[in-house]
Length: 381
Ligand SMILES: Cc1cc2nc3c(=O)[nH]c(=O)nc-3n(C[C@H](O)[C@H](O)[C@H](O)COP(=O)(O)OP(=O)(O)OC[C@H]3O[C@@H](n4cnc5c(N)ncnc54)[C@H](O)[C@@H]3O)c2cc1C
Image (tube, rainbow, N blue to C red; front, side, top):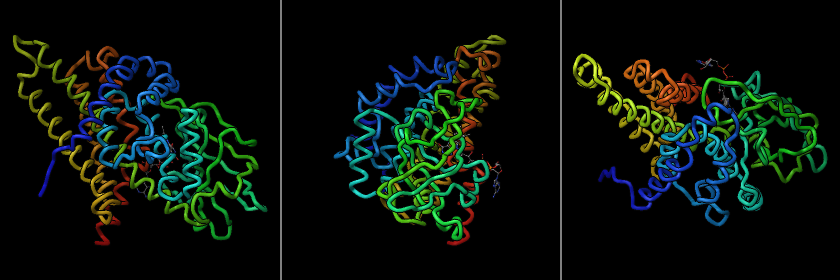
């Protein structure tokens, strides 16, 4: 039997995140959009109120969220501010390699640490010459006794300069190349780590990114996540879990822009009638509402697949990210258009939502790469 009803617990998660967003995120979103700084006061409040680290096991301070619980939560964060939402969700991204592949001891230590100091972690995959092509990663961690010595260059790393530790992907054997890709836990204050100045960017300004240089950074062997050579699989398993989060943030952002545009076009009168009474605008609102519903459905379906139909997960999570972030861009652009000059002004926040939407089509694999994932999957079926 099909059931589109959230459980009582999921409704409680939705209400709790919405309440947090109403009190902390919406009142501060323009401030952080202008400051372009990491929103520490919001993240600390999120820790106090049990909003952080939902994915972590309860015994390590998390909430044992299913992927669907996480999607419900991320939609509310996205409805407030994707920039702040991704500061929180990029932490989940960085913790996910631990979730999927770490030992109990590693989980206990690093989940415990991040919770105790109420910090954030960063996920370091992308390099100057390895963006979409993850197998082009050249960072090298060579084993020497009971340590690995890491040298390399990462870029576009969210939360980097504010992180407590990073999950870093590097080769361990130049001869095996990408087949030796391996994941490591690297404390961010390790000697030899250089954070370059913060990335200046179009939107999602409440999140921060840096380039990182690793110069002979020593990593104890016990900080390796999984086996040598398992890094690519761990990175892909991570994205299978986190792409629904990006999709959900996009749905929330689109929903917020649509709601503002709907109210505005109902109240704004030109030619003696509300703007929304013009079929051109009414149809625009109808398309926005339809796209949001469809995007939410594929997102929840993909999240559901993690627990109930893993065979479909890879394809569905890529589809959810592709579809939801594309409609996120369309809906926010239409919201600006429907509101004319007011849409373009800072006052109504929809121009920020449009700028924020763009990045969801790019990070965690561009939407062209999602199509590569989907086409490979359907051609194998
Ligand atoms: C603000 C921001 C935050 C980010 N945060 C993180 C993070 O926390 N951790 C992390 O590791 N990375 C992060 N990234 C990196 C992000 O995941 C990459 O930017 C993305 O994967 C694309 O890589 P690239 O920028 O090198 O583009 P490229 O790979 O150079 O791609 C350029 C263009 O070519 C297209 N293209 C590439 N290959 C193909 C193909 N086979 N078929 C069709 N088209 C193709 C792409 O879709 C894109 O349009 C972040 C990026 C940004 C901008």
